[in-house]
Amino acid sequence: MNFKNQLQNKNILVTGGAGFIGSNLCEVLLENNVNVTCLDNFSTGRRENLEAIKNHPNFTLIEGDIRDLETCKKACENKDFVLHQAALGSVPRSINDPITSNDVNVGGFLNMLVAARDASVKRMVYAASSSTYGDSEALPKVEDRIGKPLSPYAITKYVNELYADVFKKTYDFDTIGLRYFNVFGRKQNPGGAYAAVIPKFVMQFMNHESPTINGGGEYSRDFTYIDNVIQMNLLAITSDNKDAYNQVYNTAFGERTTLNDLVKYLKEYLSEFDSKISDVDIIYGDYRKGDVPHSLASIDKAKNLLNYQPQFSMKDGLKEAVKWYWENLK
Image (cartoon, rainbow, N blue to C red; front, side):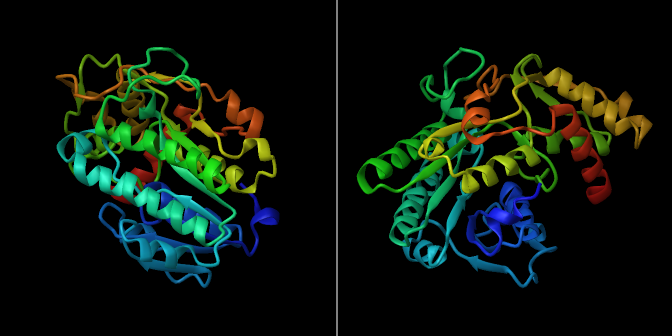
């Protein structure tokens, strides 16, 4: 993915840059000759994610919290663009602790909007979420048709979109929101109470432990490989199509996979490294509060306005991810 002509020598801030998506963005930006600043408080981001780039001459780390406005203002100084990835993810986490999720995801987001506006940043691209579709049963999910949120996390992500819209109308500040659909890939943390399903299942299989599927396994997701997400972020900051600004976009591949099928693929790909994994049993548990039954994105809007062309299907991405986990975590 080469955006060097458009990005060379640009100054870009990545909030949450030590996280899964943020650290991958930092690496690709540096490959495109960007001056990258990472802002992270390491509450969920990990220092090992920055190990390969921490001494890069074009990389700067600011250890700080987006809940502090002065930190946000310092980080935004002399920046061309902001890629705002910092957030407290996870629906269950937000159900267990809605106040902290709101403080970070809403208060921190507003701080970043104010700081970016005051620093005359050209555009802020931010991580929105497919959870915003809530109880809408329509498939595929189309950007202008959403339901009521089903979790505190979903509320915070919808509020982000509302604030971004108001900042355009009130201050003429440009943003682009990317509604991520179940992103997975290298560097995604398999540990912790709120680990995403793919890295968690991969580690359990590698340890010959039985993963637990919530419900009957027929819930489905539009699992989206990290490189597709990186492409969307770079398109959002390099696009010169003004009609594309101040919009939200589904960021996905446009296919859905049931959890039962996901487990089948994981077993198949991991068994190439360890044949015993094919014999590991699956456990079925209760449905989880706040879970949306089915998720499938229409990506027509992103294709039309941003020229988005996802390169990795779910299965292609899963093969890459499994290989990375085996090589790095086994």
